[in-house]
Image 1 (cartoon, each protein chain N blue to C red):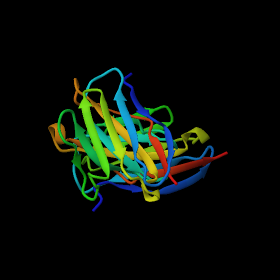
Image 2 (image 1 turned 90 degrees about the horizontal axis):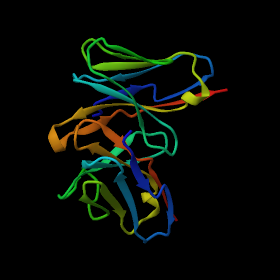
Image 3 (image 1 turned 90 degrees about the vertical axis):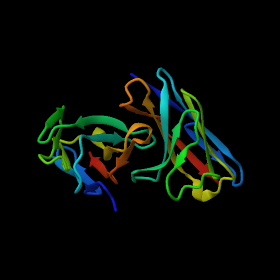
Image 4 (image 1 turned 120 degrees about the vertical axis):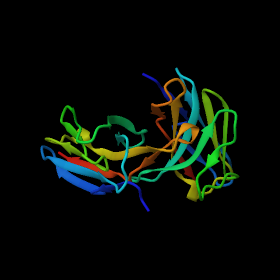
Length: 116
Length: 113
């Protein structure tokens, strides 16, 4: 089955530093990728929709300068948390839509970010 | 306002018990999806229901789509500790590149040995 690889799975960083999270579709091309944030035992909150070759569309209340999204190819999207602070600590998940079917959505296994 | 209301929000039961979780809305959907998510992992698609009144079974899990396609339920028979997780319902909204999943708030299920 289709696989979405998300890396790293866990990262601890100091306050003020930037962290990059990668999301790769391993055996399919994804025109659209999504980035979510999730707190323990709560649902996924969509942060932004990333379309290959164009600027990401951010959900209301999400700071685009804080959460930089790049979708440079059909198989890779990155989320960079800039100048991270403890309140940015969270579980971040990406998902990718199969370009061919444009139907199925495949999820990465998430990245647990802890900002000290 | 929340498009999809899930209930209960939290559920803690003993192994062997049965349970039902609900996903309700005032809107009509062409399809609805159920996911299970374990801690530290991404959500995994369990089933997609598309027809009003449809019932789908996945081993001990029974999914039902309401006749009016506004609500859905997930029933687990003889729950096991491995069923522990966050159960999420979701629907697609929008079209083309603007299509995205709208999520319910989830039901956090703990099955105790």
